[in-house]
Image (cartoon, rainbow, N blue to C red; front, side, top):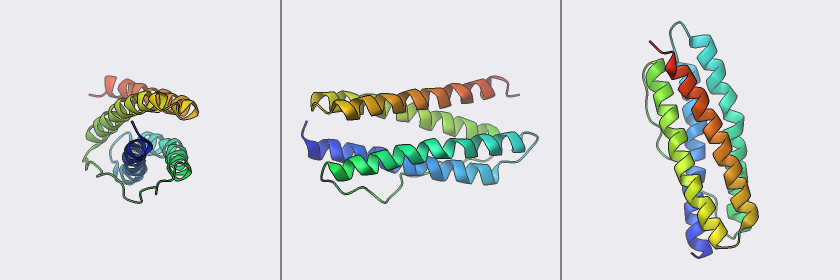
Length: 140
């Protein structure tokens, strides 16, 4: 794998981080119902992690000679708290899949620091996904 291919893949990840930030902002604004306060707080609490991921990716892309994207990936529209939580869970699962692949690609190129950081992102995303799973487990 050459750096241009990795840069392109990292830009895809960056676009998805932008999307996650937008998703959490939108969902925190739209959530309604008995659990609004708790879910609004939960959604807003996730934004700083996604911002950190986005900033790291943008910095890395630039350091590798690329141009960080400014376009987010599409945001899944969701109506209702349960649908929002399921959309978040799906996005976290997709991020884990992409970052696992990206860590493998980084290792192939000898980008060990990038590989380690991506593995940290995987841990963050798994923690987020497990939290959502626990919320959904009690959903009626």
